[in-house]
Image (cartoon, rainbow, N blue to C red):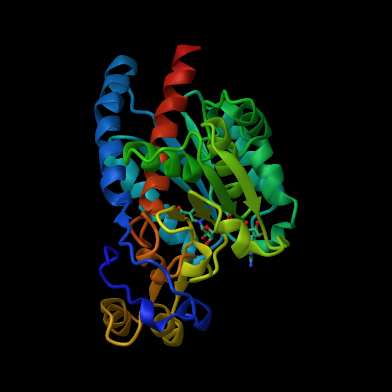
Length: 331
Ligand code: NAD
């Protein structure tokens, strides 16, 4: 199996009962694709820097001390530096008020030297439910490198986005660079979030796929997913998509990222004696996706977790920062 460390045998009973033709999926390598994208950006960043006397500049707001967010922000910061972008991380305490966060966003909107603003989600719960949307809405759409502002969402719906959400854009880049056909396919997206599911479906639709969006209230989900030539899962439920839910030969993209320290879960997904379990036993933790490892034996092509969509999300953030800087400079 191209996943390297996967074992189908330890999976769900539902999977074991089904007789499927044996196919071995091609591994869609997100690390390779992200490296290629980042390699293309570096000279463009240098051209911008020499033309404008400064590098494109990203400002990241990190509010509170969520451990996952700290890791994500550190990775984004490192990637910016490696690509020659200027990056500033604004760390604000968990007790910051909505007004303080909005105040910093307004200040960055007015700063001519700031090209991109990223507010790391989730914001602390104490800020209130509506705060995240209020903060995203306050970002200058021209600096909205996450592509979450209603103006950018509207442009995406109309098929003329300049700054589109990084994760689904990364999936499209991976599919196109891997020469996976999208036009004329039947695709199914599981998950309808604003940041992944909905924009993913729009991007596939714009490339002439016939798209179905599934969610937690979809009835008889396996019957729907079995129809997909292209299946994208973005729900955050480990091993949710099993082999019996996948059409043989389909392309399967796993957006889900679930960090886990549950050994039993790792055994049930990868099996006793698997390399993944050995690695888990050393570290005490691992990251798993939505797609059950048994799907490697059914799909035609598939993304691994880790090393699939994750690296592309960061590469597309770098690209959006450069595009924001170039667009603002060209105004
Ligand atoms: P979300 O929680 O906002 O949305 C989850 C979606 O899954 C919802 O639309 C819900 O209806 C659907 N869902 C939940 N349970 C379901 C079920 N049993 N059947 C069908 N649908 C179900 O999540 P999100 O922000 O879109 O993220 C989804 C996953 O993708 C998470 O694991 C997240 O960590 C991951 N993610 C990865 C990247 C990356 O770079 N790879 C980026 C963003 C998000």
